Image (cartoon, rainbow, N blue to C red; front, side):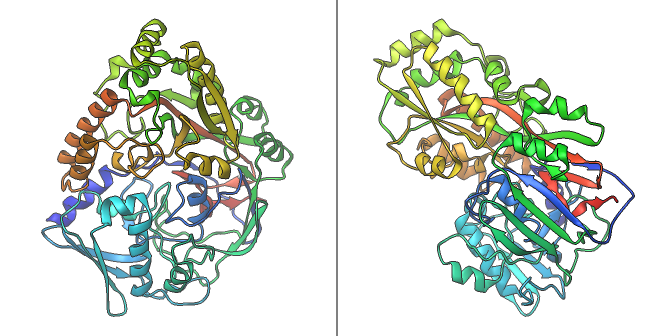
Amino acid sequence: MFYRKHLRCAALTAALLMPLTFIGNAAAEDGTLVVAYGAQPPSFDPHVTTLSQANTIARNIFETLVTLDADLNIQPGLAQSWVVSEDGRKYRFTLRHGVKFHDGQPLTPNDVVASLQRWGSSSLPGKNLFHEAKWSAEGSDIVTLDLPSPRFDVLVSLAPGITQSAVIMPASVIAAAGEKPVTQLIGTGPFRLIDWQADRMMELERYNDYTSFGGKQSGTAGDRTPTYSNLRIEFVKDEATRSLGLSTGEYDIANQLPFDSAAELQKDDTLRVDSYPGGMTNLGFNYNKPGVFEKKEARQAVDIGIERQAILTAAAVDPRFFRLNNHLMMRYQKQWPTDVGETEFNPNDTEAAKKLLQASGYKGQPLVLITTRDYADMYNAAIVLQQQLQGLGLNVKLESYDWSTYVKTRADKNAWDLVVNGGSPKPDPTQLIFLKRDFPGVPHDAALEDMVAKFQHADTIAKALDLYRQLETWNQNYVPSVRIGETDYVFGMSKRVEGLQVQDDLILWTVHLKD
């Protein structure tokens, strides 16, 4: 049957982290969990923001039609069941009964349709998969999805991801937002927002009318009912301050800790420190601005001239927390092959790079490299990159901004030539930001667009894997950007925290607070 086959393919293509669990037996009925994150994201609208931290926090508030357990299998979410037509083009979801939004409104098919229509037109995965799809409501509890052609990864794309998840919001909230990001954070999740002080903190409380997914808690599936009453998110820009606050007990959990403080924190027997794959470090070229990088020789010069190990060491300090990787997908995403271009990676051939730069016609004109200081790994990587690029003969000036200014500057096609991007993991390669036509600076290449279009209509994993190899070959030949490698996120927690799980990021509703 297509239905069973489809589920297996969806599980194979889940771009999620290997779940980590910190098990404990003690639990508290009440109490407040205090978690320190970095700077507040510009938006908490999961349909719009590409920042993983925003999505991680928002998933305590919002939920999706389907979700994934700890083994990365598709499980029921707001949809208690679904059926798929034999031709794979029609999905029929039955909604869970009795679900209410945090404002007391009941969940209806119209809310789901409005949410997923918006997600399909606003998010990168939505545009990739569902831009020609039709969502419709049937009666009081049925939502249907009609596709122009079958896709191998429909269900996993509707499950929560690290960015731009297909969350469900009230239709009224979507209507009020119009074309802007939503600011009313009203969902059906285990916590509801009760206070938000911009750039300082968010206070969430356990939603007493919460209707859980049911079953044993596993990953983001099963029973999601929190055992503690309040979740306080502190926005702390400075990494050292997050680290100190964890040591002094101000925070129960601190995420994205400084890499160079991990070893010291591990000496404290009142704390536990761990990490999980965080993202990709990438050097992008601005194809929207005429200049030297229009020439392939200049791009190749950068690709073969830099020394990635030094860049990643500056970014993540300890080899435990980074990996060399020139592939489009993360190393842990084993379903995507890594048999293209392994032997040609990181030659660090300075002399050959200088010859290529000479052949490109570069005459020493100034070039601007932009980054953000809100993410230390990106900033530290950019410093070493600037030094190495200058060593190749490129006249590179480094400009660093806070996150919001960085995003605005990156969107200005005349403001930069090179950019350090931190890309989060994606379910499939066509959702990677540095291959997206509408992402700042990305090349408009007919061969790329043809492969992406074919991938978006692949109905089997075999076809998708073949196209992925073609994309890998194109990426390494065209050099649209320069892949540096991948880094982890380091987090720490007090011994008071038990039961924490990690899938994409921290799953905070799984925590039990030990007295």
